Each structure stands twice: as structure tokens, then as C-alpha cells.
Image (cartoon, rainbow over all chains, first blue to last red; front, side, top):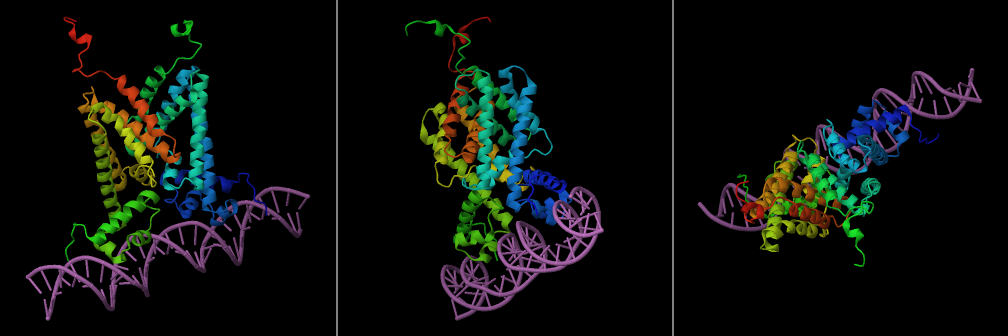
Length: 206
Length: 206
DNA sequence: TCCAATGTAGAACGGTTGGTCTATTAAACG
DNA sequence: CGTTTAATAGACCAACCGTTCTACATTGGA
């Protein structure tokens, strides 16, 4: 009687089904029955691998976080060698995501909406995901030698959220490219990195 | 036996309770029982005034749309006489909203997330709300004599969505002021209106 | 005064939900 | 070989859900 955390065929199928259904239909909108059907797995198998529906939800959120952040980072790295272009590629990543048939917004925004209490475990997991995304973006800004990388990362993240939600409520709105254009303007008008000396830097005794 | 659409005490209490509960707990997260309790109204009264739970949901969405847009427009008009300042006041309106104790994000974003199918009646109502908000913002941009008011309105709306969602997932993040700062940059770097003549305008034979 | 409308209280319904229990099968491994 | 382990199928449960129904009280006009 071991409570293994190693993936078993049944456990794997369960998680995959949960991922898909929780994402597109929401958590409260997805019944255990529907997950079992999709996974083609017996009822008991679920409770052998997960404590409860809530346990399965937590596993779903963690897996989705890992995969989404992984995809994002892979995409921007593959997009360009230039560190500034990689930032803009964030919005191409979104654009690409939006075109996928099963796009239903951000799973974590949706979850935070479904569980509005900020103290709720699912809401907390959602907030943590957004923290991770923010720090990934901040890393991109640092690599691009932008001054105040965190501040710009926050702005870039806000633009991403806006694009995601706009596209969710009004599909095919082209929000990703809209956000990209704003991001361009933002970065072009941000303070220049020190290794690009400006005339201002050469002044003495200010 | 008349199916009046005039508000009755019971009908009013029901709608008010539904508004509050659907907003903070979501639609699937709110039971008929909870609404009856909150309204202090008998079970039968609900089905006398509304066809079903879905009917009550539709009434909630319509009322919320009316009230929210009304508040927004009142706020920006009261904020300033200057047409450009009114645009910036959009984000002060958000800031004010975010500080309210029961803030739970945008009811329409939440609803579109809960009913992800764009063909679902609730999703459609949510999309329509966003259309109305967009046209209100566009009107502000026209009043400010901005060139291409719709294009700028879309950008301003995207910033608003981003701020709302950011604040929802991560409360007290100051996202409204963040968005306001980006909006400032956006408008300052947008093409100037014709009634503010520039040197370019005074040239002859270009 | 009577009647219709609007309200209340609460039982009852069929369906669904998350979760448990039992019994059985099949492979993995000492 | 026998035992453990994960898997299966499906009955079962209590709770909850949206909805309907019955019975009764209040009230404001014709």
C-alpha cells in the first residue's frame, strides 16, 4: 500500500484528462464522471492516486504551470538570438497560443475568477504562477540590459494579461499584436542601458 | 396572471442578491438556495419573476452592464472638464473600484471564463458588454480629438483589462496606476489632432 | 365584499455530484 | 508458486441541485 507519486498509466491518463477538461470547462464545470470517461479509467483508480477532486485540481494547476512556462521560454529562445527581439516574441507566443483550437484563456486567471477568495488554495496557486511568469519576463529584461527590469516586466506582463483576456472574451481580436505594438513603444521610450552611452552621460559636473 | 417586467419588492431583492452572489462567487458557485436566503424571499417568488436560474443570470448580467458602464461614465465626467484628463480618469475609476471590499474582478470576464464557448448566451452577453465599454471609450477619444479614436480606444481597453485581471489575481498590485502610466505614454506619442496646428501644417506646396 | 395578485412556508421530485465499498482480474516479482 | 499491487466494473450513499407543487396569508382595487 504505497502512495506513489510516480506516474502510472492510469494516473497519467487521469491527469491528462483533468488538464484538458478543467482548462476548457472550468473546475466546477467539470465532473469526476467526465474525467473518468475521458481518461477511460475506473472510478477507484482516481481515488487511489489522488486524495480528492481538489487534489486532482492542485495537480492540474502545477502541471499546467510547468508546461505553460516551459512553452513560453522555449518559444522566445527559439524565436531569436537578440535579447530585445525575445521580449517581443512573448506576444508572438501569445498570438500562436490564441490560434489553438482549444484556447480558453489563461487557466490561472480563470481559476482565480472561479475561486475569488485570495486565501483559497487554488487562488494562491494561480497567483504563484503569475509570479513565476513575471520573474521569467524580468529575466528577459535583464538579459536585454534594460534599466529597471522589474518595472518594465510588470508593464509587459500587464499587456500580456490584457491581450489574453481580450482574446478570450472576443476571439480573433488580434489582441496579441496590439499588445506587441504597445510593448514596442514602451521599450523604445524606456531609459537606455548604460552600455549605450548617450550625450547626457558625457556631461561633467551636473 | 400577468408576467410583469416592473420591479416588485421581491423581484428587486432577488436581483440584488443575485447580483452580489453571482459576482463574488461565480454563477456555478452560487445556488438558488443561497440567493433565496440572501434575498429573504420565498422559493416560489423566484420562479414567479424569472423563468429559471439562467433567466436570473441574464437579468444579472444586463443590470450589471448598465450599472458598471453608468458608473464609469459618471466618474470620468465628474473627474475633469478636460477631455484628455477624462481618458486618464478611466484608470482612476479602476483604482477606486479595486479598493472596494467586494472587488472580484470583472463580472463579464469571469462569466466568459466560466462559459468558455463563445456561442453560449452568457458568453455573448459578456462580449456585448465589452463592445459597449469600447464604444464608450471611443467616444472619449473622439471628444479629445484624437486621431483614429477607435484604434486608441482598443489600446486603452486592453490596458484596462490587463489592470483588472492583474489586480484580481494579485490584489493590491497597483495595476491601475501602472496602466495609467502606459496610457499616458500611448497618448503622448500618438498622432496630434489637426486643431492643434503644427509647423507642418503651415507649409505650402509639399 | 369578493377576487385576483403577490407573497410565504415547506414538502417533494428527479437528477447529479463527490466519494465509498465490494468483488474480481491481471500482471510483477520474490 | 504465491503474494502483492494496480487495475477493472459497478452498486451504493448522502448531500445538493434546480424545479414543481400544494396550501395558506396578505392586500389593494372593482
